Length: 218
Image (cartoon, rainbow, N blue to C red):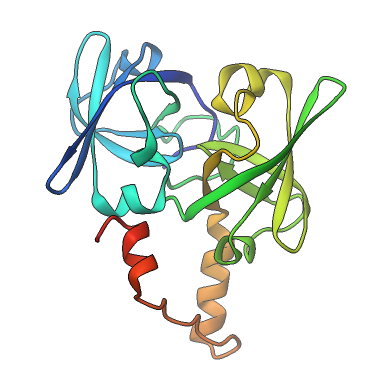
């Protein structure tokens, strides 16, 4: 479990494809101070397990499923990623409860400056957008953000100068893809209503070539 408060930006050292996913190596500093093998790290919003820990870098294994639903498969050496270690029970919860289980990707459609605030407009897929509400929470590339407004096809969020400086959101440009995780609470409320018969079940996904390609299975 994470808070969506990024500790630092790491730099991708390498992404090496394998038979069952890929091995991602990341140069870092702060998150290495007490990182142990087997511990969880949020890498641009995706919860991954430390498989190697060195003095200046660490490595994680990324599954085929994770490559299919996140932007991690497109990373190249030198790319910046947001990093956060898992929460401790006595930590302050500065953002909101974030699982690190990315729901899917969105697209940055507009980037504007309003005084010292950066305004981002994101295109959000309907399965994620259904959980978005004005003044609710959303995680974008591992960053906990408050939704300013919701439209028919996306949301807008405001980035304060500190967040723009210490996360990748400050360098994202229109057309860039971002990892999205909707608020955990909405999913549980929906499921409870479905179980009580007050909401219809969500339709099962259509397993076609496009579905398989997005998950790296073709």
